[in-house]
Image 1 (spheres, each protein chain N blue to C red):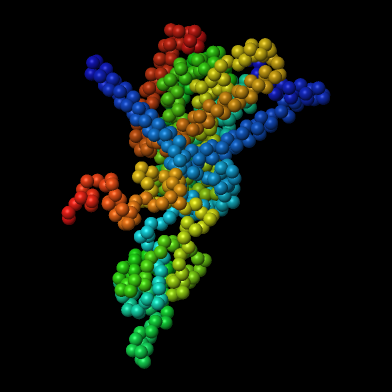
Image 2 (cartoon, rainbow over the protein chains, first blue to last red):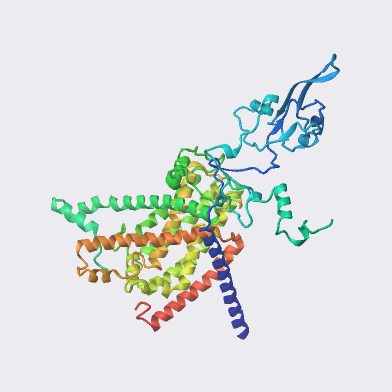
Length: 208
Length: 372
């Protein structure tokens, strides 16, 4: 009899525990109702891509030496380097350079291995076209500078997580015109020689 | 309150004044409340779909629909129109009669149960003397429709889903009926109007939820299970057996399932508010208002005010419960089929029986408080 009553007791305790779990869960869900949505409402709001963002590739025709390293390191040998050997000047003459962004995987190998730094990656990711053949960018199209999201007056640009000040998680609270968080190198030096750096970083009284 | 706004009486008197007989006036009157409740049910579904999407979005820190009409209120209409114009497919080698009849059998009993939902003393389609029992009986037709849909789809996953859905529906009917039986025992009547009247003798203090707290919880859980809302949405969850018995349905037949699901949710919320939360009763009894204003209860102004107040209170209570159901959907994980059946048979059924016995004992011991 006592055994049975103990079982009933533990059963009731379990039932109450389960309902307490449920209630805790509902309070969490209810608490979320009062929070601001984290949605970035594209196309009225756009995130500012980070500095190392691997967007569309930019190409400077004048710096290219037609070495074709970019073609060799590309996983799919994509860039089309159209050069001919000029017999008089005994130099390569570059006629056309094109990259098909319908096939490009934006890995950045070509940018990394280019010896003359004529290839770089921009922050442009809106490459959608109606016809896939329009994605085959020639050297003129590759040489165009991308449009900046901050320069578009109809778009509210938002900073990414890495560029938000300490403790701030929501980009809607911070204006994109605010100066970037963190110091530039010159500012760091100024700060180090000024009055209040931490002891180990001070350069005023060290003889290193 | 026994002298509520009686629109049928006024209508009958007006028609008799121009010379029609009383029976003819009654027949002419009949379509109006039915159409009105049908329109109210459909508008309720549209509002519920919108609420579900907006509240789900808020709970997940999203925004939800905002471009279809101001704040996205036309989104449910867009959903409905899309389903209307989609192609209606019947799978190859499927039993087309059963396939078509399945959604009908799932939807029609739910709409028919709106017969007994009261918004005021006389503001319901028909004060059937066995109101609540009619609803329980009609909701028992639902498993047949589910089985038909699952079997007729010619799809083994749909068949399994239909079997599971029918098992779930049947398992949770018994604790539902037992908790309703406890209320009926206290009220001494099966009519929904009588149940509400008995609860409004002392405002919020006399609502049934205080006398039947366990019954309220059991009824709410069983109602959620009957509506196949999370945590009991095993039959129609996307991760389970594709979409269960609804997999092969597209276009208007799927719209019938979709509509039925939401109408069932609103109906259950309304019935919970009728059975446990005092129906159309305001927390303060309306007699105090009429005594404050020194007008008799029969005055037309008082009648219109109390009728409007009753309708607003019913809708408020129902939508509070719908809100809780939506929150629960995004809070709880899904229950497995064996856990689901365990819960229904091994947990809720004994507790509802115990609740019934307790209510019976209290009714005999304290007849003044527990219904003489």
